[in-house]
Length: 173
Image (cartoon, rainbow, N blue to C red):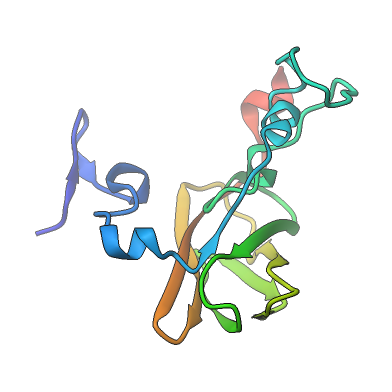
């Protein structure tokens, strides 16, 4: 029997409803890779509304999917977009991670580079996730993931995308 979301109307749960799953304390204490974020990045996301900062502001904000978070959610995928993510190796000094892609339904997903190599002098790597709609449909969110594998370590981030042809709210307002 499928997991159902609480609330009305009843529906089959999706990743927004059940989240990332249960935490494994041993694996959480030794994650391998982390997605670090600078507080100034949040200020750019909020359109520089937070004043007590030394970040220079031009009054524009960046979309949420540009925050360096361990997830990607694109609410209005109309055209191909490329999203950067930066990871820091906090595991074994010499590590090689390979990407495994599970594309959201109807979305072509590519990762460059598909292999991340870390050593004593190279602890931080940036990769780019390119999402492209495969067809023009107005629809609900579809879900996938990007998993980095290195021997015993797996680092997974969920990916959610909603293809839009026409954003009724944004285009009318």
